[in-house]
Length: 286
Image 1 (cartoon, rainbow, N blue to C red):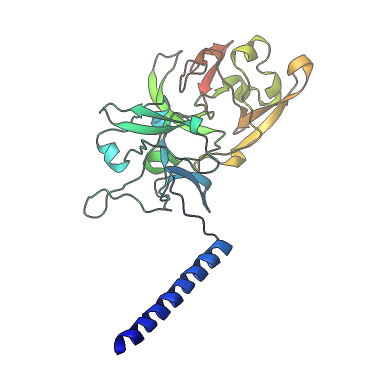
Image 2: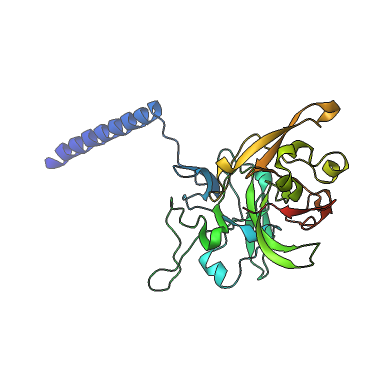
């Protein structure tokens, strides 16, 4: 005699559960929740640096100033502290362009993702037990590490720092130097005449000189954290097209220039020690 009663209760419960399920779906339809997308690389906004590149979990990505030529100079023990970032199936967050990313093959045969030809890395410092442990999502402890040769990657740097062996053409001496480059890693120089004659900066290099040493100018400063925006400025030149005026970026009071023989080759330094008249040219050291 109890079976019909239980059957009725069971049917009633099934009806109530179905109604609740339909109500839940209806509520979800009214307030749709977007599934969280997991990107290979995305822009993450930070209080200290603004937008920086991170992986999908928010782990900070770094560039190494010694990688200016577009190949990785971080091998052996360096690679333990700075693990390679690589994504075989790259998916990008808003504000990033797939054309800016590529893959290189390292000397050990492994692959590494690059951004605007700079190889990308994580930071994994050694803990008290001597084990390399990657920093947590949101941390940026690797910025300026190793004598300011590592920096977070930003999408809009207008001046960067590079490190390379530099041959001085006047002394035939080679030294390793940090120097300023543009976003395409083209070397920037200063002119000793501008130091010697600071009151005539716009006319210290004109005509054939400026053809060999073109002007560098940016109207927006986005810098690695070791550089100060207050060190940059601009002068007005009067040798623009058809005699018009144009701007020329300065660093620590001196105009900064390209050197035509460097072309568009990343990190190429042909101008160190070259002279115009009696005055030599030097890479712009930070």
